[in-house]
Image (cartoon, rainbow, N blue to C red):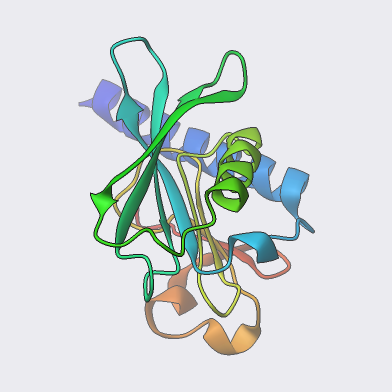
Length: 159
């Protein structure tokens, strides 16, 4: 029982430490280029490359853009639009640049809404873990219970 409690404490402490490290490093980072975009690591392919799913401007581009990324060489191996219903207005060059930039953050997921609120996940999670609000007016409801880390960066303590 004690071992289980220590393991849970260690996992929570490690996640909190990773969140704080990220906030300290990217406290003033400008995420405006990611507005209306979410990028997350879906898994890997048979060659060991990461598979990224990118949702952007969901009003016009319905579905997910897929990128296979070689994180050792820091380069895109391939891209695919087969999960999109309509990719005609998709700026693949701009999205590919965002994917390369996303990889430098060492995150599992990054999503920025139309208001500029940033959802950053340092490891896999179904729910938001770390949010930078663009304005205090967005800190409502469940977010009021989150722990303030620095500035408008908040951490979910209910993980």
